[in-house]
Amino acid sequence: MNKPPSLFLGLFLFGVSRLHAVDPWAQWALETDVGGATALASQTVREEGKSGLSAGVMVRLSRDEIWDTGFGYNVLSLQNNRRLRPATMVADRRFSPWGAWAPYLRLGAGLSTDQSRGSLNRLVGRGGIGLRRPINGRWEVGIKSEVWYSPRAGETGNDMLFLTAGLTLSRSFARAVKPKIVIEPDPVKQPTPEPVEEVTKSVPAQKVELPKPVRILTEPPKPLHILFRTEGWKIDKSDAEAKEKALQAMAQFLFAFPTVPAEIHGHSDSKGPAGYNMALSRRRAEALRDLFVTRWGLPSNRFAIFAHGSKKPVASNGTPLGRAKNRRAVVIVLSEWLP
Image 1 (cartoon, rainbow, N blue to C red):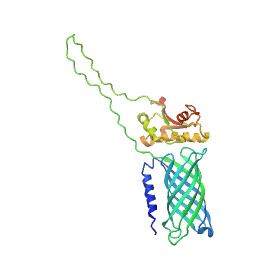
Image 2: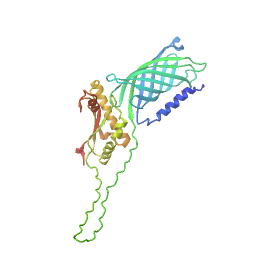
Image 3: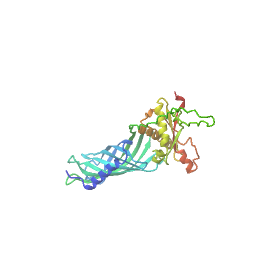
Image 4: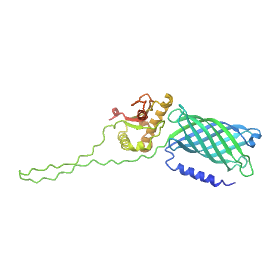
């Protein structure tokens, strides 16, 4: 078996290091695709059976609001026993949505099974474009088309150049992690005052100022607002850090009163179609819910999700500042359920 070149090893190690740059499983998706395949320009074109089917599965890891990385396995099968079975690392570059559809550019590289030797010893590259449309906060459907190229390995097999096109279906997941335990300070106990010795009436006794006890939170916290970037649905790190105390107080209250439910309302500005804004506002509400689930271990069923799109603005959508205030998700504790 031929050894892969050092360039591919460097690409593979770079991809692995990127996957471990942050927690890769906090938000991830499983994507499947099925479609047709045809040989473009290779020995396969001059032989019978230049068309066939393609199928694949991919794990897609969300890096930020622009990039996804991941890895996948595909099978491209033509007639006359011409097959390509690549395992690749992939990077997706997302772009601004077109209405309800979100376009992306996909590039990847990896290794493939040689059609004649049955071993992972030939390189393969892939590149293409696609569109995804959210069904709800978890499921997405889409279409995509890719070009695959794999040079022959050694003296056997043929160069392969394929074009594929088909449908995709993906499901997003958020991993629940062990909650952080926050130890609250005990209320400060009032010290027992020492007996005051009797003094003459001409010297008045001084009052002893005692420290006040720490107030324990027994009332529900006020509604908590988290803002989002234009067309974004992931919680901005700087905004989460600014609201750290409020988020932590909300989580501690829900832990202290496990029978009290909460609601999360997602909103958007008026830019874009109504259907897209409705789906975007739901994803914002679910992103905030997932933050409570993954960081503090609260059950997801503690939160009722509501999507309003652009129907309930708190500011004018005619200015950038007003639209920024409308791109939000709001957590509300239902105080009427307090015991």
